[in-house]
Length: 165
Image (tube, rainbow, N blue to C red; front, side, top):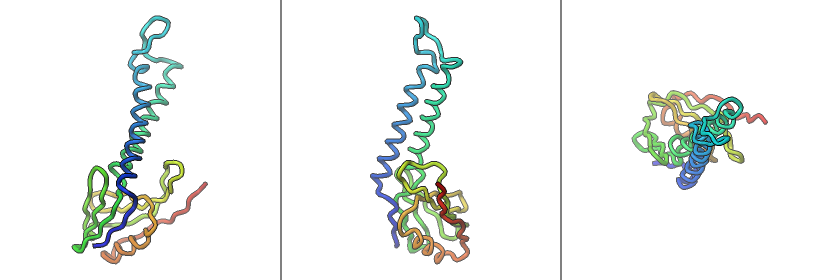
């Protein structure tokens, strides 16, 4: 069994809770105006017209926070385990996924469209029979790709990591 460590479980847990918590803060800040719980000129009224823009921005920020939180808690694996039975286990904070090497169709090198500041935007997308797994860049990534291709030689490897600034 070969194991690749992408990041620590604690790091993914911290980033997921932090981003999700920021999303909750923005939701709590936006919801009262949207629902009409804010008093204006002595009257309780919902946000409308020009007052609606900050509420929409707050809700979008909440959505983005939850999205990044889910990315680190439920989507990004922190450990990759290649078992002797030719299967790969993608261990995530909230759930794990085991995929047979024969089910993998393609490994694609991509660059994330949105990313946290200071984090490497390079990613690997492993396309398999039941969907895809997005893996953040880690140092021995080329070894991992070579190991998976050795398990199943028919896997296509596509893409390059060209980061545009």
